[in-house]
Image (cartoon, rainbow, N blue to C red; front, side, top):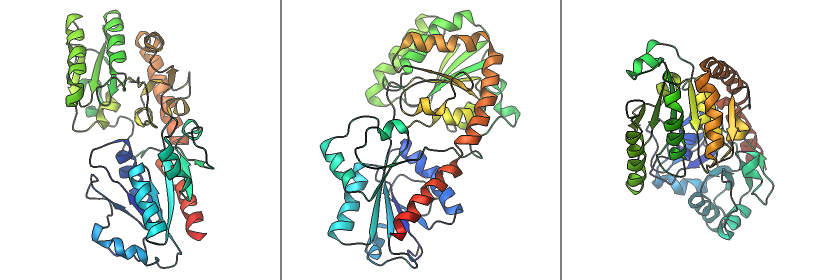
Length: 348
């Protein structure tokens, strides 16, 4: 691919799938549709995304046509540092942008990297509160064509072959950080009182968390609920599972931004979430779902209970959740906001 008309080089220096990967995969095609000349650089991304090759790096010494600079939008320390070297040591015509989702104090090293950026974006007001430099808040969005309400029989609970009439789910890697144990504990306590509901846990169990996952399965078996609390592992396509749910639970103890509540609401599913990440900025409390303090089991259980007792409430909040995401979290809104940042940086 020629880089003559490319004004944004989006690095992705991690092979394993992550939340950053999901963001890049969804966002770049939308930016292309807006007319931005953008390519990715690095491993771990699907083939349909526009890419430049490592051997093309010397071409970055040449300015793009009709622009003074290219933008290097980094999302990790491992992407900020090469950008600094290329701009400040190799004197490539680059402007550096860092997007911060972290909700914790940054290390001295990270603070140094951030101070050397030309512009900074925070994915939520909360993550922005940990930054010590001027920044713009641009919240992540959701592709409303990819995540959408039920459209066919395959999107219904009946398509799962699981018992019950209503489905409640928790998606993501099975680990303490994600609060999977809090969800399972709540299901063990609540499901015996609500026989129409079945729970599913979808997500990979890595080797280091194998014992944690086995303990959860043993607790479910001991409660005699193995038929109603199912561990599905990493499913091939998570999107229809969102549409089959009546209630989604995001019980993370800590999170970066966290897209799953948006994915659920875009699928017309109500959400109960902790206040980790940007969850509290995504959910309209009492209208599209509920938010509880991260790590607080009792609060999580008590927020789930009314939905199990009244599925119509969950369905109503699911409908309002869809409207809320369509109005406030469409992917195009994120792409357009970033486009304004890129344009300002390139024209400096």
